[in-house]
Image 1 (spheres, rainbow, N blue to C red):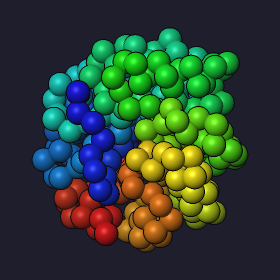
Image 2: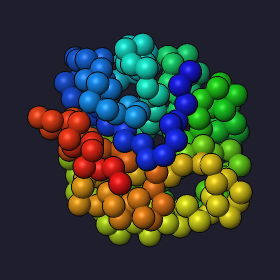
Image 3: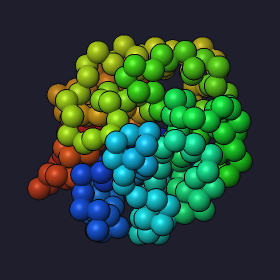
Length: 222
């Protein structure tokens, strides 16, 4: 199973693509130079939108050689982590606000399944949870929009949270854990996000909706 690459990682989100052709979209993004694929898994409960399940993730994972991150915006993600690991996802990212009682245990379960364990922080979620789960984390996804819909405006006020999360991980001895950012990421904010400590830039419509996705991704790199 592929792991999170080193260095700056550009991870196109397929949320805004034709959901009948996600496999083809993933292949196109890999050919254009993507380092990782980001899958927004929504259940219509934790967020208002319903997207897709592990079967679609498996089709995407089989189609590409780069790692795939399943971002589970779902209630009770413990029911789903095994199926997304079996689908071939390299990383599984969950939210602390989900109805799971033992987030630490679930992060450990994700790691036991051979996947990178990620924790996603909504804009209003205090980052202090990172301090107490740092030993379990391979990545922290800082949301710079409220989850549920693509095409939202980037919240620049979250840049301080990116820096705070990076410091918490470093202070806890989790220097290898990556900070990711998702939400309205484009060339106008990518440099500041990277300076703040982000290493993974998740970008949706800016990349997948571009007539030249390779150029769009290159514009996000340092």
